[in-house]
Length: 181
Image 1: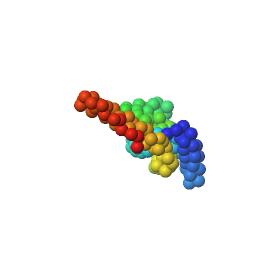
Image 2: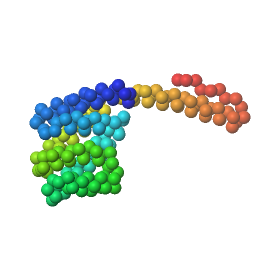
Image 3: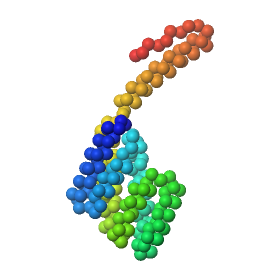
């Protein structure tokens, strides 16, 4: 994806995510914009994959936060224990690209001194808005697919030429190179 297209997707998507999250009254609405920014990858497949991994990690983070922060009364030490457990589990299951974003969402529990169902729901909706907009933008705003197809054509032509030349040499005769289509 070229850098101007990606910058446009980040700016439009993040702004839209913040507006939507704010309009429906979510706490920490700006986080939805940051989630959009972090969700956007260079390809549709990467974007979808990252979003799914981050949502899985969100469930893990919410569960750990609920038990650890509640159990140890929202101290800085309990947040440290939460981070330790969350990072270990994410690394174990290949979810490392979800650590930073979900740790930021967990700071909201720490700041609010609550892991209530309403706050977990707030964070889940922030995640869905941010990731959803990132996915939609990568699905419907073209990236570099045309450039990739053009380069594929060039590579295929070069491979054909090399194969014709090799075939000719194997038969010990001159082969005419293929013509570009």
